[in-house]
Length: 254
Image (tube, rainbow, N blue to C red; front, side, top):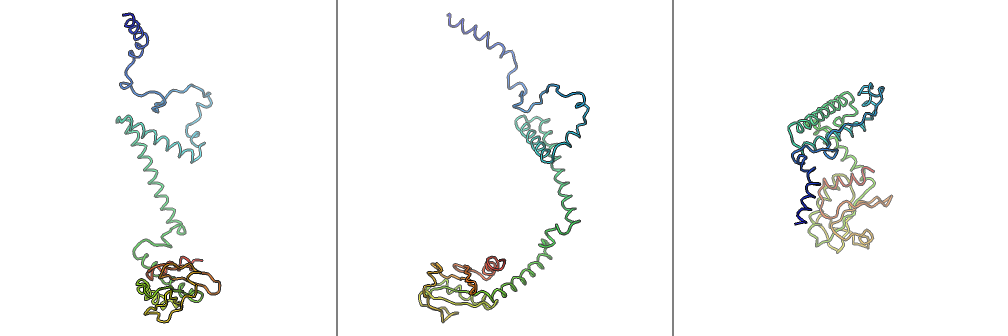
């Protein structure tokens, strides 16, 4: 009985203030945890109070303004998610609308600047419309062909193969067409003494494959006899386009 009386007194003394207040869930969330505006103590003097707000904004750098803008946008979003009242959602939508309008204005100014400054226009060099694109591709092809023909004066191919390798027999006519097209010299090296229809008189491997770490065939290697530069062009079957791209990438742009 005494224990019941003590517990009753405890609840009256300590629980009454809590029960007297509204439930947490029936009140708006309070405090800085929920981004509610709070009154700050009056710390400004009369001179500061008279200072226009736009002067304070002008004192901030663009980076500071952007950080504050992003923070406010995020604050409104979070507030609208956790307390989705019409007012909170509207507040976020208005800020987001302002952001989109600023982005649209920036995009318009960007295009105006490009039109007024042709040297900044990427499409003047790399056109994206259909007509200009075809012209660009044609010109690039001409330059690539000229470059590949010019490289034939300083580079040649070593083509390693085996007579019993079906991939080597498939790749051989591709190599021969490429060499004829651009004037490249091809030295074929047989690793097993076999031959190819396109290259019936190959060189026999004298240890060169091991020195070049050739472990898979077909293998096509570009070599500069003067500088001794050795560059792998293809391990396995490659198309002519792939060979062209690899040579231009590895050699033509150096």
